[in-house]
Image (cartoon, rainbow, N blue to C red; front, top):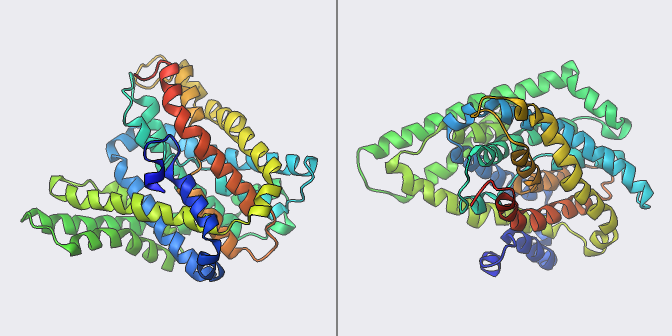
Length: 392
């Protein structure tokens, strides 16, 4: 999948999904074993979120914290609710019966932006101001975590007996508050534990230049250990993995180990997720849900995402302070970065594995949204940045 797309604007993830669809029979034993399927995608997701934390310097994260939180917390909630409302409104109009639980879960699963295929393209652009680029990268680091928390909360609720408004209202109940507090508390705690393990490795390696195979395994195992530790106490393992990466800064003597780690993410973790996602797809069902899936995806990309971005960050266009101010063109650019990547794919697979009620349309509509954001956003984002005069 990588070499098939290396000289094209198409992300390799799209081909990985196609390979998963083509290998449906070969991968059927894994897909049929829901525990094994969940384990594969969960470990991959923990490693990816850990990598997202590593890529975001803590200083930059703290400098942009208000803007990031606006996009990641109320922004994800608004995106999830609006997307669910669109699915609920368009499905009957196009002749589809989508269960309410699927409507609510799809909003939560797809709400976060994960521009894994876009970020490498931005590295080749010279931005006149780095604000928009930094926000896009930083946003993706945190809103994946918020998306996982939102989806996990909804999987705990009896969605079939609720309404869309009722489901979101239940998020402010004492029971859900305690659940999310436990998730966040133990997630942060074991994220710090993961960071301390990495600091231990860094101190051991600082005294000599030799690199051993165990170093890479230690580094790779850390987010898994943080994930499992948090999960055992009812915390968010995804948050723990992200925090461990965010707090750790790889010094020069750790660069080779970190470099290997990112190769594992790009060469194993992400392809595995999209391969499994493709294996879940029934081509006949995917074709049948095409009108609904394509309509939802286009509305999401060109209407809901811009509305959310301008609602959350619009006040920054009125500020006089140059470092903090954002231009309308920068908001347009941020609005167009609407890729739905690896973590939403993980949540989609996880929901399929955990939900026992009928999930008609869950994989099919989710797949169309993921596919269209992967196909449309990466090729045109660099063009848009130049067209808006933000980059050379």
